[in-house]
Amino acid sequence: MTNDVIICVKNLVKTYGNFTAVNGISFDVHKGEIFGLLGQNGAGKSTTLEIIETLRDKTSGEVTVNGYNLDNEPGQIKKIIGVQLQTSGFYPNLYLVELMRLFAGLYNRDADPMHLLKLVNLEEKAKSKFKELSGGQKQRFSIATTLINDPLIVFLDEPTTGLDPQARRNLWQLIRDVRDKGTTVILTTHYMDEAEALCDRVAIMDAGNIIAMDTPDRLIDRLVETGFERPKEVKKANLEDVFIYLTGHEFSQ
Image (cartoon, rainbow, N blue to C red; front, side, top):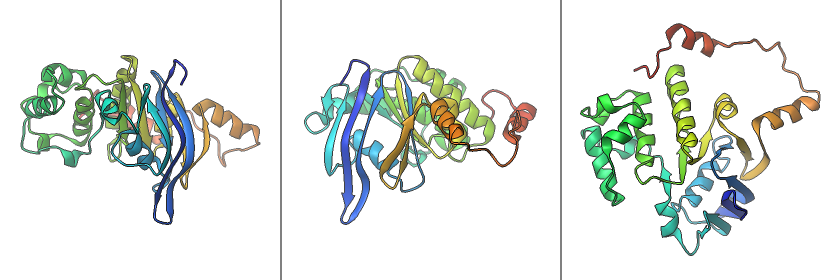
């Protein structure tokens, strides 16, 4: 790996019987970038993340994370990554501050729950139960739990699915803030506008293969060079922009 590469994936394969979920893909992730894995359901993106996160066994290939080999040093990889849990992974009747202490204990870390909640603008909800939070607040809390062990890399699997437009934009800013503090972010998403707004580079997956990888701008420019045109003129704003302009307040409930 070169000095700026924090994740190196070479010829990664994952099969289930006769079905190939990940078909010999290779890519690098650079330190301090937001890297997106894009694709339809079943494209193999979540499987790829779970293998890198040490949560799923690979069939073949090589994965290196910050110099640690997945085959020989999975425990070292676990120490330097943060993985977003789905909301079903939290005890609904515990207060947020209690949940943060619980997860800090699992990491064997002396974390400051209020500091972490403040990072995601939830300090006023410290004594609220998880089940009482809105969808956007639950997602922000989920991201806060990935930061407990001060990770070098954070993995976010479809972090804004089901959120309203304002909550989505707020979460985008939170993800940028995480990256700006020096943490590498890898995310999957179905929303192309999200990938375009957030990601420094993206890899597009289809049927277990990476079919394109570059910055969003370069991928778009390459398409335009083919003569592609949208069927109608692109407006300077869209309905989501209207909604946020008319209703938007930072970190709306």
